[in-house]
Image 1 (cartoon, rainbow, N blue to C red):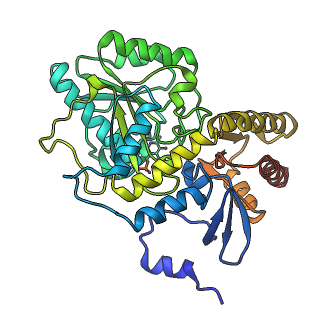
Image 2: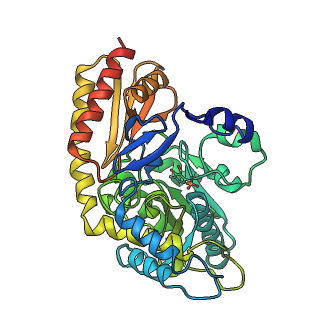
Length: 397
Ligand code: PLP
């Protein structure tokens, strides 16, 4: 008989996250199984984390091998996996230096600290980081303030100041918000959690030119868009617009908790006086997993695969939009897509799809997000789309 995990959670676990009635016990590739043995297609990838698929054997082997060798040391010492990962990330990006941490929010905190120090040293004490409305940058107190969605801040006011918000895609608003207090602009190259909003190339190019004109830093939060998700290893590469600082997490570790921020040489302004650090950041275990996972993405050309599969998925979703009454909009790039509906029945659709064996992300009350592992097979895309269409036909009849 199955243990009632739902009851155990309600007794012991803080009620901070609403769960679906599914206990996931196992995964392989795009598929996961619950404690009743029911199979699901995972088109959430643990929120864009399992880019190389669940239980990837190359990553599992790297984790097992590292666990038997060395898990962690104090950061007074060099460790090989950390430096191998650093070299891989720098050699494959436009950035020069990296610092490894444990999550996306922590990576963004590090990037903002870097920008504030840069402002202190080079910009007369400028400290503000302009971010976009509808952005999502994490849930630490400062990243809650950086996130341009008031409902995340409301329970914790006053949140740290220094994060003016402007509409995403509006270069004039960005220029108006820039003052002598501005140290940096921080944007997601494609807004993920805020609705899968793909900006125009003109916008990102204009932001880059504005940062150059004002000598301020451009930070790209690539926590969700990095590591192949948009069809290039880093999202900025698809737009051809280079940041001064870039943050990563999610897909970086193939499932283990890890984050990183990278910077151009001139923006790497920390000094070894306790200005930044982390007990677990860049530990041997998660670094070995991230090295194996990122190398797997590169060795297996998963970026090109994500681009091709994403074009196919986009075509099929747009075809559904043309045929089905309930669908209002389809947006996306690579393997990050959103479907918006005419009415607020997305959570009903989401539950119907779970019952039918498809896990999706819910975006507000009227949209869903699809972000399968980059290893997804074309039959799995077809299967997922069939389940989605059955669900839409049922819910939006
Ligand atoms: N930045 C972006 C763009 C994200 O999508 C997320 C998480 O969804 C974060 C930051 C926060 O990452 P984490 O949950 O690892 O702290």
